Length: 250
Image (tube, rainbow, N blue to C red; front, side, top):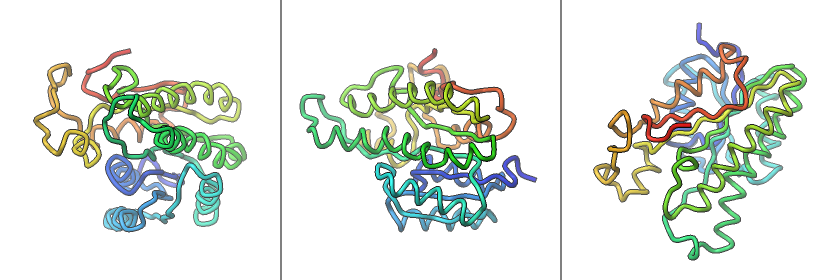
């Protein structure tokens, strides 16, 4: 029996990288999955990998910055599986490193819409169903970059700080309904998005500031996300947990 047996989980940004790794882990733990992202082909690949693990999942293409799409995601979960127990807010827009004064207003607004507003909209969409159950777990993926700063990513870092603030405020509001809200802050990961930021050369990433001197992998993060999705973490809320090999501490 898996640790998430009988639970229904929505995972956004599930088409690649960390989102895909979380989907695979949740499948092993026997959650029923609703997987969302903007890229249909990549989502289908995630679904195939989940099914190879004997997992049960449905997929939906959508944009979490659009309220109508987040409502459709929640409706799909309820229609297919009868409820919602877990939300993993993971969707984020890809960015390229540039000075703050070269970021256009349009790019700034788009990053804010997906990386921050999307988390709020998804939480709004699932809340009625979690409230009805009197239980739920919301896990917001943020970043170590908020704690250390990151040159050339001011819009990205700003959203990741906003996610931590949102996590704390929502934990206050949703605790009365038995809903836990926590954040996980990974450091740099050796996945597709991470490699793109350093030109595909992993040796360019300096691990010397880490206590554990290696680059992180998506598999290093899925354990804590799973723990926060289980009833083992019922008395933990409003927290941000860094998973970065000790690069930053708080």
